[in-house]
Image (cartoon, rainbow, N blue to C red; front, side, top):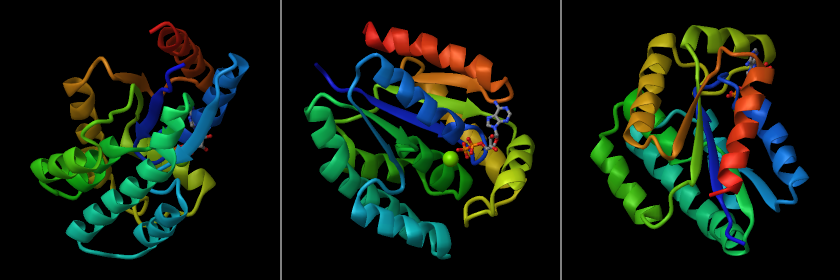
Length: 204
Ligand SMILES: Nc1ncnc2c1ncn2[C@@H]1O[C@H](COP(=O)(O)OP(=O)(O)O)[C@@H](O)[C@H]1O
Ligand SMILES: [Mg+2]
């Protein structure tokens, strides 16, 4: 049994958390051994770095390096061992978030991110990435209704427009890995699409 690496992506408020727990239940119902995790975070050290990243102001270079430091620890301690054991790893955010937020959002050069990516996980990419695509204003309305914002969520609409376009560019560049979901659709409609894709993943 080969493990699979599945990531959920999209701007804050686009719908990742709404679907990830449900998605994992659907996999478990099929008898699949699943690990749920998130970035930044997923290991003790990476969770400590997450606290810093979500709370402290810092230069973009520092932010980018801390993201990859957290990712490196997460990969070594959790993601790679789980995949090697045949488990499916379902991760809320991964390197596409770095391209979208630190790259498109904050202006870190794409080549620099690509270099760090090649160094930290040049041998490993997600098998599937769900991109929840949603207009920033709608995402902001949804977030405001339910939570107090962290350092990223306090950014303005223009920032999230850049992040959204960064994600769309990533999806266009790798259409066989990405499934782009229109986040404006009803939760029930999105679940039908996700369930269909689970069938596809199980058969490939
Ligand atoms: N398809 C949808 N239609 C309407 N509201 C939604 C939909 N998806 C998510 N929401 C609501 O939007 C808010 C943010 O969703 P969430 O899943 O937390 O986003 P994310 O994890 O991507 O930041 C939640 O209150 C959630 O209930
Ligand atoms: Mg979430």
